[in-house]
Image (cartoon, rainbow, N blue to C red; front, side, top):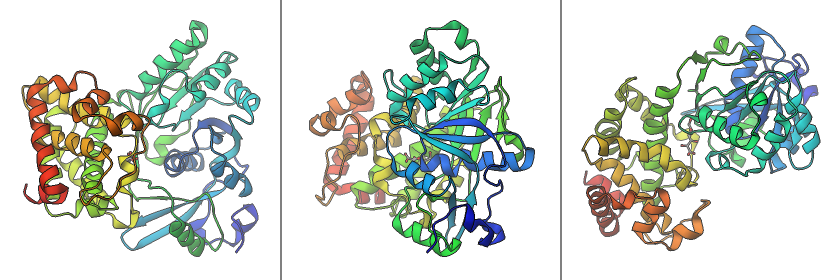
Length: 439
Ligand code: CS2
């Protein structure tokens, strides 16, 4: 079977063709973190924006540490495809948004030159929650490059964090200590959304059948996608609005709703599902009582904390998306890095409800499920792997200490603690499946 590259494009079906031909647009964006999510989200929007609105906005990809994806992309002349799955439907299309790729550790000089390059007017990031800490390798390299910068540039966080733009501004500002360079930069906030599970050998095989070429860098996504971006780009930007991106002055309400009513519910299903032995999110949602519990989580705990946008219909749509069995999103994948994810997914809801004098029953259930999950055993005794920067500490800690590691002071809130303990007893005695079924 031929490997995907430029020479196989003429033989592909019309609906599988890239919207932008390789080399058609010059580079205008530098992206850190060649994640599956980025390839199925920002890259797809950007390719459409170039096709609709023109401009030199092709993306230079920077791999921070792993060589795998960059190697596969280089072998394919930076082409890859997105497999969109829904129920029994699956379509694959090649994306032509990438200009070239660099490896941060192997080619730091080339990355620095690109950060300083006036042709690059936007830098985007999908580096996961845990990279937003002082001293990370990506931040170091970025700051060194920014010291060489002389023209305006937008730095865009596409990670699932509250106020991601402001977070990035604080990190960069503190590390850079250079007001002249800071004056050239903007840090637009974003809300990014598309469910993109880790690619499996089975999905690569489906892509191969659909394309008639082997693609080692293919990604899988649901049909739904959304991107809300604060319109603050001093050096210009692609015509993203032509690709359906919502450009606005304030992304905060969208982020808040997405982090709490999508990612928060995702994490809830991940921990409860993993404890119950369910491998995927759709199967966790299909557990008796799970859907009703998630609806009540949204209606009783989350909706009262968000007034700027409708939450209940959004939550219903999210559950429909989670029910897409073709995605096969692993509960263990969503459960990973909980210490980094739960603050913005669950603790904001908890804090707002506590401030209003209420004890959020379902958010407490999620915290109890997480406490039990990090202990390392499913309800039937099966071992559960723990992928988390705090894994070593969490594994051996008491429930109280686990809450403290998540957020100092959290365990001192007596009414909340009582609610979490009540759920912990239920989970220990009856397991997650029976606890959900009894709701
Ligand atoms: C998920 C997200 O893995 C996870 O933690 O909750 O990646 C989720 O699928 C995306 O944010 C959806 O936009």
